[in-house]
Length: 425
Ligand SMILES: *Cc1c(COP(=O)(O)O)cnc(C)c1O
Image (cartoon, rainbow, N blue to C red; front, top):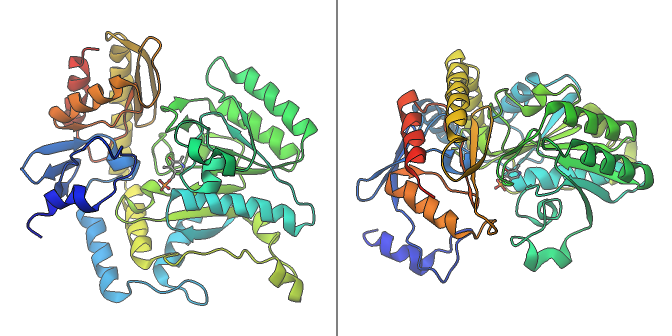
């Protein structure tokens, strides 16, 4: 198609994009390593892994090869009544990397569906036992996705406003960032004393969309163990934190206490194909089991057309192969060290109000006086400043963050730091 660039604004509706702004979307024609190339030949360093999905670089040749092999064998088959090797291999290998109580993997398409599945499983867990419960506890400013259930357990604000009347009721407690731990724990203990709570959902250790808010594994352990004592179903949304982002394969690896359900997506296929999974414990799975006819009534009646797509599963297995390589972990450690060093420097830069880092994630928050939030004018200035310099840093309001593919080199990461140094508020 010759005029595809012109036809973009005519025929395509882009996400999170105001329709009155005549936004020109950058036409990307190639990806290689940490770089994207546009139709005019300009290169962009993808410092945020294309919305956090890309782990090993664009067009990683190994994953590309594995997906190409799979596409010649089996592109798709419905997943009820049928199965295939890539789905079984990926599930088996994911479970091998988790504590032994996790025994089943349920496939879906994306992060939001992985969360929806976890929520529906938790409600049906109680329903199947004849003691339905409907209260959910979540963290303030949480983000769990854009479908209705996922939206309901996310912090309410400008994104959810048109839909607020349709969202089920959720009790939000403060995120236990430093200084707010005891407020959070007090609120949690009051809630679980007086309410019949079905589940507790959280983004472990780092709340991504909230601006990379970091909190400690110690306080999370306390929260989980309080919920555990009451039999509350514990749901970890590791859609962003999974696959090395916090410095361990999963964020839960840094905690003593484990959840009952885990939502994974984003990095799971190395950024090649859409996929979500919900991992569950044997105890959760058992609550869907019953003898004979009664068993049918307990079935989890949920599925998506593209459930366990073989190409996505093949990409997932290939990405796991790369996650198992020592070189990948050497890169993760090196990125962590570079971030740790730059964080000290960044805290002294003019206009910087706070710096947070965890694993390969580094967030820098600029002070804005009274104006904060997603629609802050500083957001556009930041975005444009870095794009002009060929660096993709899509800010969350007045907060910029780096969450790079692990193939980013020391020099490439230094390019990002240099640009940040140059920015004047
Ligand atoms: C991105 C994200 C989601 C939603 O995933 P999608 O694939 O965009 O639907 C859910 N939870 C967390 C923590 C996320 O970062």
